[in-house]
Image (cartoon, helix red, strand yellow):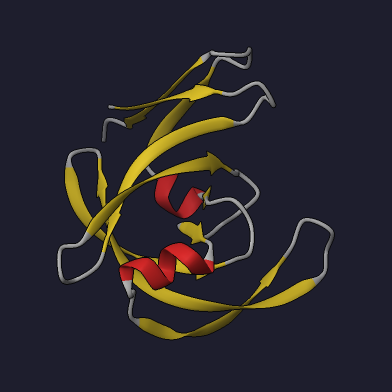
Length: 124
């Protein structure tokens, strides 16, 4: 099970470990964004710090309906106790965790300041 907390702004925050193929790792606080269908967004500073390998670019539709092109990188995360290689979209915003990473899991958010966030695998 993965846990997190709701911050004063009502955002569900989950701390994850993100790394590169050279096994350099950092801890990143991510905001759960159920409107984001990708795996993870990271700001350019973290992508540069980890020297993540560039994989190309893709177009995404934002919440306001506009489209934007994102650079895509490859990263390794520790997810539910396992190493998982995922696509990361570069974005000049806070790190976002999308439903691509949450797929197959139950997410429970107690939406009060300091509320518990739990993410657990669905039984098959």
